[in-house]
Image 1 (cartoon, rainbow, N blue to C red):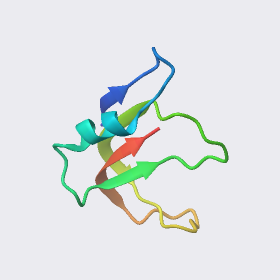
Image 2 (tube, rainbow, N blue to C red):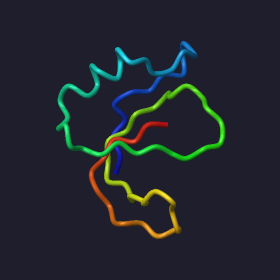
Image 3 (cartoon, helix red, strand yellow):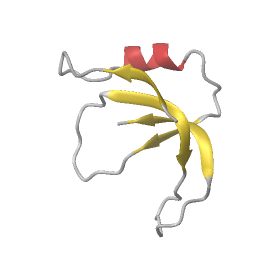
Image 4 (tube, helix red, strand yellow):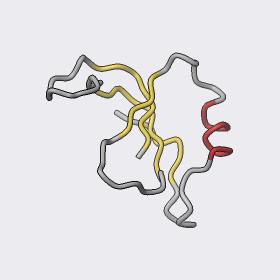
Amino acid sequence: MSKKIFEDYRTGGGLTVGMLQKLLLNYPNDMKVTVRVLDEHFPARIVKEGDYKIYPFGCNGVAQGKEECLRIE
């Protein structure tokens, strides 16, 4: 189950570098960060902590396994 650590739909501005720095203070440096792959670019509005499937670059549709990660949407 994932835990939301940041959610911003009110201001419309999305996640900033300053906000991200504060969010990451209590996380280990080697923790993976996952993103959903899209063709367009939009402001990040949600950061979740949880166990997520990790796919390799050049994805062939097969996950490498699950890891505890932060997911940015």
